Length: 296
Image (cartoon, rainbow, N blue to C red; front, side, top):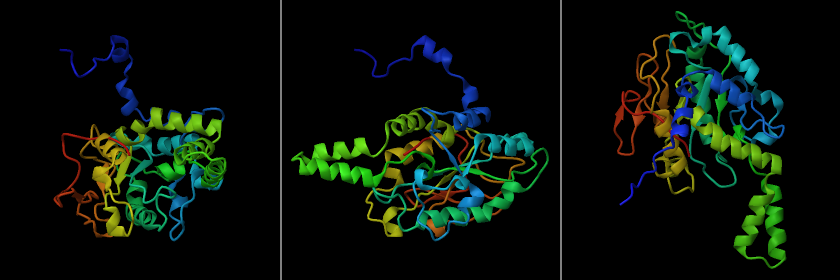
């Protein structure tokens, strides 16, 4: 009988470069990269996001230019911050969360407000110099809704309605909607962002990951499945917990923070640790020494 696992070809094994997940240059290069004139990924400026409490966050294409921080600026922030000091952290925060609806991931603004609450409590740590770490004056945030090129719901609905008027089946109408919601250039850039960069934002040792694991029904969402039952968020969590350092010496914040039950998540003393709440309700004080990394 043949093996159920396919062994990677020798050239594939040799092409893997561990520096992809340890050298911050890979993060900045991914941000600077373009596909058909578009950046597959853009990071939201933390100082801008902190001003958005009470708003419904728009998709990336509808946000103002000041909402984003460029690869060059973020690299300069990292350089001025002593290149992350001994911990070699990057000024990048990654959000893992479940979408509350197909049309908008956070229509009631509950997850946005939780992120803002967390950043307001933690941002002093990001900017505080300690040893070789000189502090970061800004942070870039990867959050798929404002960071990736999202589909246009109006164009999608128009294409769907047109297909139904032509007597097409519901399945064919939905396919027409999916095809119309992004331009060809947006589709190419979106595909690159998903297939070539998702591992970086969650798995890279230099990024900080916030896991929004509150069960959707507890925040009034109609979504049935929670993060522990979603493929993407399972991937994101596994990736984030794979190779990150358990303890940071100069950058006094946790590499992977599970915000647990929303505002009820317990803040622990020392080092800025947050309680990690599992699906069984147990908690501990941070990433375990063994496993670390994954996405939605």
